[in-house]
Image 1 (cartoon, rainbow, N blue to C red):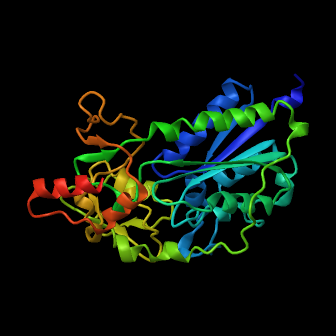
Image 2 (cartoon, one colour):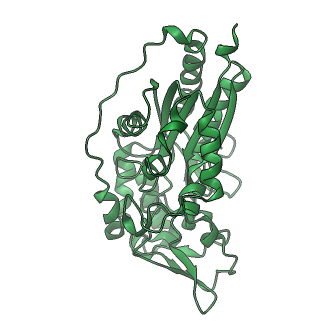
Image 3 (cartoon, helix red, strand yellow):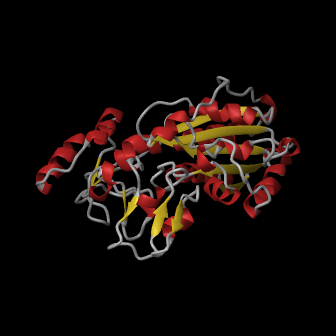
Length: 342
């Protein structure tokens, strides 16, 4: 093999609770271990937070910090990259506000893309089909004439509060979805053995990427609140919010700025004390999703380490039914009702 067959692969991944990162790392592991490519991962959430992207619900934010160390590292890596992998979770049929902004010409100059030869994309979603493959391909194609190698979309457990099951239950990953990752990665690896013959994958150019639906989520999820009896003032939520929508108030407890919050539920899922609630969605009565849980449904006692019953990944219509779920006064009956929804 010639040296040209061994390339530098850069993954830029927007992952809130680890689902999309799992997909990226799984692809990267195969490209590195089985095909010899150099693989680097960059966390888009850290860039969005440090550079102050996606603020005040705008696709191009005011007060951006374009010299932050996270962007400087991205520029260094991108300039040396042969193959770019871009991936994200799906929010209202699109990447979450802030991810596209990373690729703004004023953020990443054109010369950073001159070495790029190929790119591919990947997403995770829980509920509905979406055009995000075309959206991601469009975003990169605006900056580079690199050849598109295709898209992988993996359906994973939901991690948005109003689509999560009630306490005591947890959606299991679908083995058939996980099994789709390896063939995708190997297809890329095999093509790169003879890069000169790669024809590329066609995609539909998206002319208008409209994020307005993401700004209506408060009507469904409601506003976040802190249960002060549970909060330990650890500031985990402040550190992890990609949009800096959480500040410590005069009382020492977290406070939420609704003009910035995008209701991504990361604070809700990651709080180690389960002190964050979305009362309108009955968040206190729903299970949390701090990271991927690969416990199998029905294997052994069918429960994960937290004692939650693992249920097979529901069909999208069943997940959407959870938006109307309300806990009954009788907790047992409420759980039975929710079990039917899962």
